[in-house]
Length: 206
Image 1 (tube, rainbow, N blue to C red):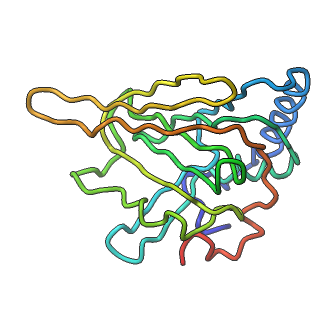
Image 2 (image 1 turned 90 degrees about the vertical axis):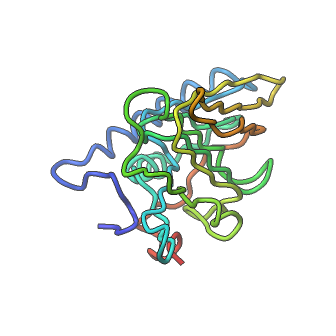
């Protein structure tokens, strides 16, 4: 069992083979739509991150490792993916990789629009910003990582082959929400060339 995988079930029969088949179906569908602006929508994040020890050694953890493992086993290569858009984790999170052309597509987690936010949250930050440009996930450099534990929603503004994602946070008379966060989304190839079982276990934690 990989100790840097959280929120993943390793008990009983694994759904990884089922997920892998689904990824293959998605890739097949994409082949019939060349040069399309693509989004991958998943309930659970493909590249979600959590800092489970913000006051200690900043042990950075990736959750839902089954999905990335399944995508790796399916050997998918889907072009022109602007972002992976997910929920599941009850906060807002955005993770960018590499440069405008290289690295995984941007991971957007919009899990802050529904019920109770991720707990325990007592005003402490998620502390993901400290990993920017310093750590890798499945072989790709994490260029930007940020999370906000406030209620809000997201807007996607298409711009030709690209798009802008705008995260907005709620406020009222007694609480001033965070400022809007804008992220430029660039089409990239979604291809995962390694799984967590192939990493040293120190990739995220060092």
